Image (cartoon, rainbow, N blue to C red):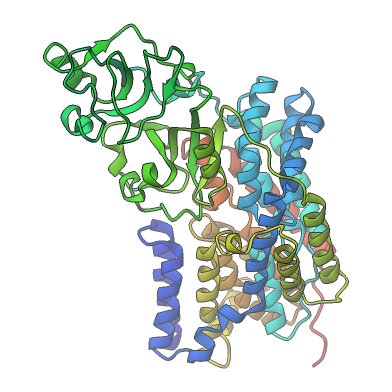
Amino acid sequence: MEHLFILGLIGIALALFACEIVRPDIVAIGVALSLLLTRAVSIQEGFSGFSNPAVITVLCMFILSSGLVRTGVADRLAGLITRMGGGHPALLTAAVMITVGTMSAFMNNIGAVAILLPTMFAIARKSDYPVARLLIPLSFGSLLGGLTTLIGTPPNLLCSMALEEAGFDSFRLFDFLPTGLAVMATGVLYMAWIGRFLIPVRKSAETLTQQYQLQDYLTELVVPENSPMAGKSLAESSFRKETGLSVLRIRRAAVPGRTILPSPATVLEPGDRLIVEGNLDHLIRGKEAGPLKIYAETKFDDKSLTGEDVELAEVGIAPRSALTGKSINQGHLHRRFNVLVLALRRRGQTLQKQFTSVPLAVGDMLLVQGAPEAINEMAHSPEFLVVNRLEHEARDARRAGLALGIMAVAIACAATGLLHISVAGMLGVLLMAVTGCVRVQDMYQDVEWRVIFLIACMMPLGIAMDDQHTGTARWLAENVVDWTGGYGPRVVMASLFLFTTLITEVMSNAAAAVLLAPIGVAIAVGLGLEPYPFLMAIAIGASTTFLTPIGHQANMLVYGVGNYRFSDFPRVGLLLNALIFTVAMVVVPIVWPFAPLPPR
């Protein structure tokens, strides 16, 4: 009966992860609460995930990654891409993947992708190469690079922790390097010579204004001399209420060349030309009767909507954004950042009418207009990814060397065994904060708390499955051994790899590792073998998420920015999955042989 309860809970969690009706971290909280309410685990065990060294290490890696980002270290690595790639598309693809893979080996995958996104657009413009053929390699490279070190991705840490909790030696920092490099090299060669040709290049507009189809949604109005609106502020004239329009910019006739980014207190003057956003049909019907005149000769493009005091920018909703699930109106973007949102694009479709009431999702793209300082504020906010703007401001790199040195110290302490990796991570965080590489108030913003809660709340499920509780892990392991054990350990390892890969396409790779790592250990013990090759296969399988854009947040980011379709990912990723599976099945047993359990 206990087995059925645990399996039922796992099934419900998997279904909710797959359909995305409920956020993954909320599903994980529900799993932990179910175990606590049914007393499948104790109170201490139910909340033990929050003190688990693996969770602490993941938390520290978010902050250490932020230090590399905020001090410009990651930007310098990004600058290597152009020099490495030259003008050849294959070399450029390889350079992108190697650079992001190197970054992902020591920092958060999503952070590495987010840092390099604006660079991809700049490289595409400079090399006249489609940006769509750079963004999928960028995402895939981040996932593959994370496989090369213990801290590269949460599944590696979680598999190592499962070994330690079962009484085995945990993986060391660079134990993943031999298998990770083999898999990484496979992915780079495939994407450089085959995969990039499978990425469709769809013709896109040349400017942001054209991409978001604003030409038919913007017009210019003139305030006549005798207009009742002259001498009144936008608020006093009830401009938006009366016309249903948003004023984006004002060209002041009294001062030629001057443009104003309006606020409710801006006073209208005779002769002002207002660039407005709204329904043209409504404007045309009121053309003769209204207090404003349509100036129809204006042709709107990026240049007409920008200037010395105002910019256009393409802004993505970041994975840890608090705006997820909220509309533009609910997020009060205009009040918080003093920008106007001109349009919303989701999965290639531009929304213009009533888009400000649409709940936002990760990967949604907003076209915003605002002063340079307002765009800078958005660029430094953890809620947004400014991926395309007129002028990208370089980061302050005064502490870049210091941040890089702190990261090197933390890695060295963990690699040499001088400190446990969680302690080394905490030391690195403290040094980053004390030296000012990361401001204390930014530390907590830079942590992806949804991932922390997801991992911590899924861990009690692994506890509930052990022999001291329901024994479900051993029960499943015995059944798997009965079904596949006769075919040899390689077939068992292949089965674990394939199952991990499949469920990771629809759920968090961290949750998959938490769920399957204890089962992998139990299966290995059931076969009388050391668990290392089986856990290594699970770790690799958990990062082989190339078939769907929802398998990993790095995929979700490029999915929205790159104007891809859902089918583009399996088209490119299916063969890559097959190649990595083949390579893993050959390399893992060579590096981690199927050794019998030592006598205990």
